[in-house]
Image 1: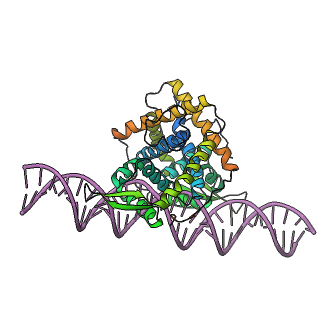
Image 2: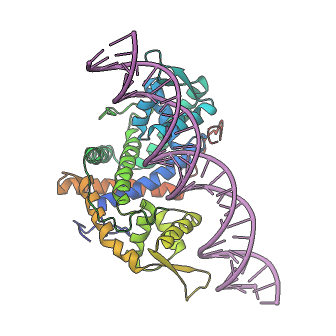
Image 3: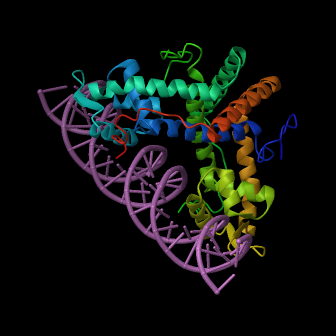
Amino acid sequence: MSGDPDGLRQLPGAAAGGPISHAIFRLARIHQLLAGRLLRAAGLHPSQELLLMRLWESGPQRQAALAEELGTDSAGTTRIVQRLEAAGYVRRLPDPADRRATLVATTPAGDELRSCVEHIWTQLEELTAGDMTEAQRRTALASLRALEENVLATEAGSRCGMPAAKRGAARR
Amino acid sequence: MSGDPDGLRQLPGAAAGGPISHAIFRLARIHQLLAGRLLRAAGLHPSQELLLMRLWESGPQRQAALAEELGTDSAGTTRIVQRLEAAGYVRRLPDPADRRATLVATTPAGDELRSCVEHIWTQLEELTAGDMTEAQRRTALASLRALEENVLATEAGSRCGMPAAKRGAARR
DNA sequence: GGGGATTACCTGTCCTGGACAGCAGATTCG
DNA sequence: CGAATCTGCTGTCCAGGACAGGTAATCCCC
């Protein structure tokens, strides 16, 4: 048990690894759960919704751009787009500039979801930020951004050597 | 890459702050990605690892307790335990106090993973906290905890009504 | 211009895991 | 004793991450 810099261990599990990572895990889990629950009411899944938001914000996009934005690989993006297309929220256009690429654009049916989704986001934000003051929100936002940048920075580089004793043993 | 470092896309009605949820999503995604990548070296998946950590911290547990801790339902917990058992990291004991229940305990092979996993957590924490000062870490941790508590609070109570226009349209 | 490398996407497969429903054994309490 | 309840297991459906392999379009250098 390293760390525990200031003795904050009111939450079970905070003792073992890094408290910040643990807190991120826990927050992420329940936040995604909450978001998923809210989005369900609109018949969407989180990834689908994020993809749609991207389209609303920036107009038709290539799948590669969407993939990078969402953090999924190209295969996963293909499937998400396919589901949205099957649902009629999205359609594919040939990219006039590059016939290899396909542009993904919202359909009118997809656009109709926008206000609904934005309402959900407003709800989510309210529930998440709760009773925080404006200053607290700013602080939280800054912390989240800082952490994100740290992780993004490592994303690029780090290779980490591990014994890998029984590698893959529990992966099947 | 995804640019938009401070570009909080203004969602209508989000003037007071819509971006916190967004920041949580983004941080959660890349952090989980990073954690998953690190854990892979040990042949584990995030959920498996969290379950093991729980066992290391608190000794043999019932599945119900593990399920609540991990946030999974009982069915999911069963499967995770089964995989860990198949890998030899965990075993099941009858609960002497209640023969309906089974206690899940680590095996020696599972315990051997502990230092490995703790090393990974240390790494993860380092990469996540990066070059933050001690004060910054404390601030970040406080913000994360505050957000978590807010979401937890809503988890319990709120039912939130949505029009549910085309419910399920994109869910198949 | 021609031909190989690269890009962008699609497909199929395997696995993890969330949600849900139904089931069996054990326990508890009237 | 007997019914309600609790605990865990199973099976099904689906979303999605990782990976490998394939095809068509494009790029680039000779």
